[in-house]
Structure formats: C-alpha cells, structure tokens
Length: 157
Ligand code: 4NP
Image (cartoon, rainbow, N blue to C red; front, side):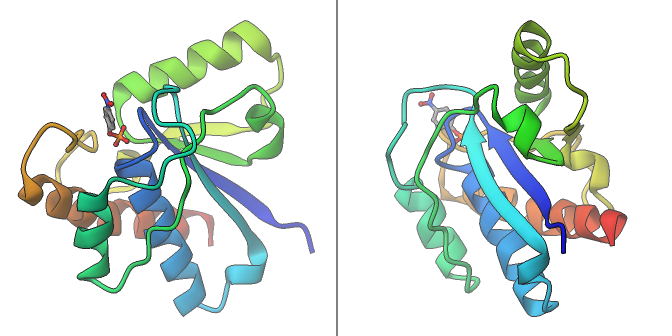
C-alpha cells in the first residue's frame, strides 16, 4: 500500500504546524487510517530547530486531548520530492515554500496548498500566528485548524 504523505508548515514549527500535525494524527487515528499516512510538520525559519512545541500550544492542545509531540525542523528541498501534500498555515508561509521550491526543484510532485482552503465553519483565510499574543490565540488556532484539517482529510478521502 502506497502511503499518502502530508506535511504542515508554518514559520517557526513550534505553534501552528505542530498543532495541525497533532490534529491530523488524532483524526486519522479515530478513523482507523493511521497506516495510510506519513505525517510531519516543519517551519520555513530555522530559529527553533530541535525544540519542542511552544508550551502554551502544548497545554491548549492537551485540554482537548491532543498530544503535540513534534520537534521543530526546517523545511528543505528533499521535502518537495517526499510529500504528496505541503500545507501552509498562512500566505507568507505559502510564498516562502513556493520560493524555496522554485529556486531548487523543478518537480511538481508535491501539491502545495494553504490549509485554510479547506475551511468550512471558520472564515479565517490564514491561520493567525499566536506567538506574540495571549492564550486565547492558541485556542483560536486549534479551533480553526480542527475545521480546516478535517476538511483537508475529507477532500482526499
Ligand atoms: P509558528 O509561530 O510559526 O506558528 O511556529 C511562531 C513561532 C516563533 C516565531 C514566530 C512565529 N518567532 O518569531 O520566533
């Protein structure tokens, strides 16, 4: 069985994309689809490489039964050959991912999308960066990602 590979990408890989990854892992587990997927997350930036997700996100996620386990890494050119879907959290991430791809890879293997293209309940066109805000920002990120990440899974099921 060929697995479908999915990577969620934000700026630092310590807030939004680790949350999206945890939500997706939880969803496919509940649907009995774990063995069908490879799931990862990364940042466009390098500042937080090797770090656990931001404690504020881990705590907000734990409150809804989600384990955020990712260790930060930076997206690299091999990811364009490895992942079927590269899902950006905001327009800036989307542009940076495409710039990296266009400078280094001629392959169109990966489908690069904005995760909010798959929203249905929430209107947000981007996942807002919660890093410099208060705790409520982390809950909002989880709310809108629960909507759009499940919309993404439905779109490929
Ligand atoms: P993320 O949030 O992109 O959702 O992981 C951020 C984390 C760190 C920084 C910016 C955004 N930072 O500037 O260090």
